[in-house]
Length: 413
Image (cartoon, rainbow, N blue to C red; front, side, top):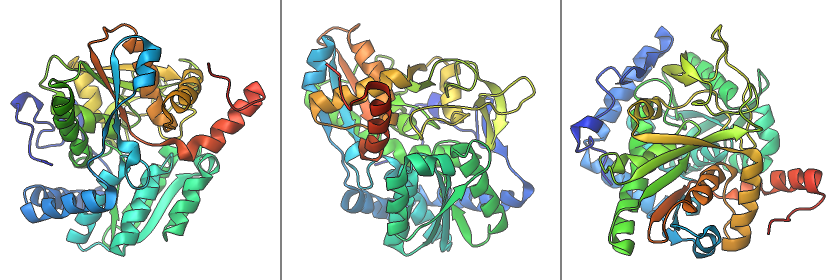
């Protein structure tokens, strides 16, 4: 696994000030500037330190379970009637999602900086669980902030975090979801900055977080390149990933940015439909603004107030998107689509029924697009879905929704 700069100079982002073109940067209170500068210096040293990288590789293999497999979804491929559909199986990692890649890297950085207390935010709970797990492993004190609404719909993950020793703090402000959890974590960090490291869970926020989180997830794309070449003798025609903040997607995409033959597509949360307050598709009605540390595309009104968001998936209902995604969207290198709640619930059941794999609701957004797109492609073409997490955490929520809407849990043919 490499975390050096991209070999193609066109993709050596961000610049020295943390900007991806006009996106990114550092928009935080003065009280956090010293901590961010300390973190930036620690990461710049660690990413060039062979001992740090070797220790990270060891933990990724022995604790997290890397490398993850590349799986041909044969029955879904036949169902689609077009391109071959492969899954990059991040769902098989310890704690259930790709989030463990970044949590391990940042926990090692916290130790390197002498910080014994860790805080984190979480939406769907997977980042919180990953952070709790690495803190238990390394003996770090752990506090996780989570919106009260998300705590209800992700009760299993709340218990898992507490079981591993984390203090889970419910956030009652605003929509009681991810945005508010991040705000509370930042307030904590401002107050306890000398003793505490904030393990931010996605490729957003102030520099160096977008770059650092991306680098810790680049292992996804690095493995994928090697695996698809070994399996098919060529690169895929398209790679698809869901996008909330965008960490799993940029991790899968980054190694392919300078491969023009590989189409890259991120899939946002279309929610109940593209109407104000009913979705979290930032490129469908969002505009340039600043939120929680960086400048990027944000769902906001004309006065700059953050709009309400909605998604059946707790991990995608964030009002902003990672700045690197906005940059590559402007450059037309990464395309973006969206999937609605209704489509996601159908694909969630379909994948479970045909492949025996229960995907996370977040990851299922990518699967919706892949099933749609595969039908437009030839049978000799290859489509890879980054299956970023597993759906154990979502089963009770989906069962309740289906029982309320259909009177039964099932019905997909």
